[in-house]
Image (cartoon, rainbow, N blue to C red; front, side, top):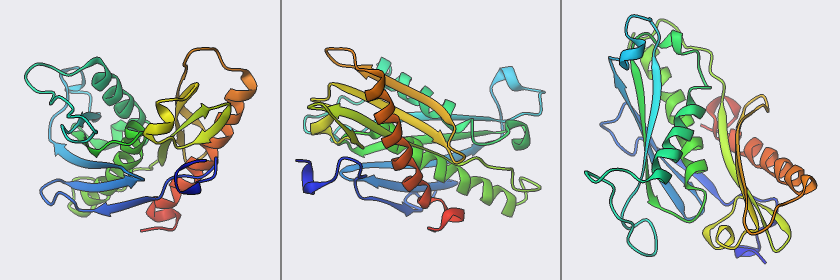
Length: 237
């Protein structure tokens, strides 16, 4: 039995609160159950050295877990350097976001997205991707309004969700209690036209079957389709 009698194919309650950081160029707080992530976007009028003179822009991400986000204090990552897990997650977020738009349409500027986890109860990387994509869409609209872009670039919506197998049952959108005992877990990133951007899937203890993987894929597609209702042009402002 899942918490609150949630069905195997049901998302946790998800919501978005905009303008959580007024000094950011765009920001929001995404809540997915008890996982809460602030996503803020900063516009930088420069690009990495490998893009200088190319006319192309760049999108990158940074991810962090705040010290009191978990039941035991999470060590702050600062001057000592970030963990391998943090580097892996922020690279995943950045790769996913760069699928949203033709970087050549940005001009030589960087859109830097900061994802800071306030409360962690499973699915922090997928909530970060979903929230960051919404914030990125918002900042592009702002750049058109203030004249930094001549026209709104064509945007491909993206969203992400976790799926796992617990006690032999595929479950959508794992919380921490489920993730910690999962026999297999996976993170799926999908575009608005139902193409896969990235799939990370891991067996814990024993390999899982192709049938199990296909079941997880089906659950992920269902969950991400529901997440796309968060997009303004798809019905929810």
